[in-house]
Length: 117
Length: 116
Image 1: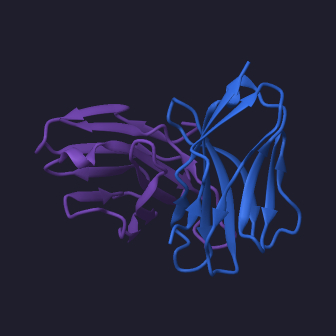
Image 2: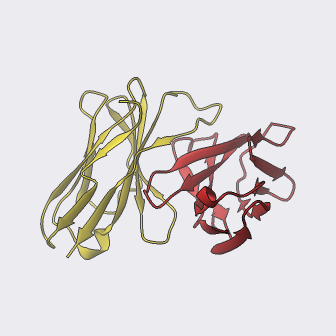
């Protein structure tokens, strides 16, 4: 596709349920990022992949959060035993750059809005 | 300390007028990039404009310009000739060039309302 695609667009989960959020980045983009955006706030970094390698997962809030990108394209963010505080919009972004400079802009998907009841 | 500070939670502007959205940043890196994104109610973050720390001229993209004042660490977004479709959340973001190059730091955003 032309842009970053995320699914589902909305997800309602009962507390304690596991969820899986999918991101399909722009074809050929090396870098993939997951961000969490709480209501009324700016996005906050969760994790970063370069191809299939997860190079930074320092933003994952707990060990209930797990992300993978096994073939270097599609990525899945999994949240186990969801809690109410996990309710947020989860944004995926990608960029072509593998290098550090110049700072490269990100292309974002529309996000998955997760509501945990 | 906050990496990106946006002090205007909400702004109103009359259609066809110009508006400035404030952004200050904090970094000790010499090389960094500053970005502005627009987020309409649909949720997608739309890239607007980019300013590199070594760029001597202020960036411009159509009706958007970035007022970059390096010594004051500010990167304000100026939207000229506002349109109704400009109503959205606007986020200032920074990407550093050092070991944190993979992180974008976002501000808390400014909600812009354009009045007809």
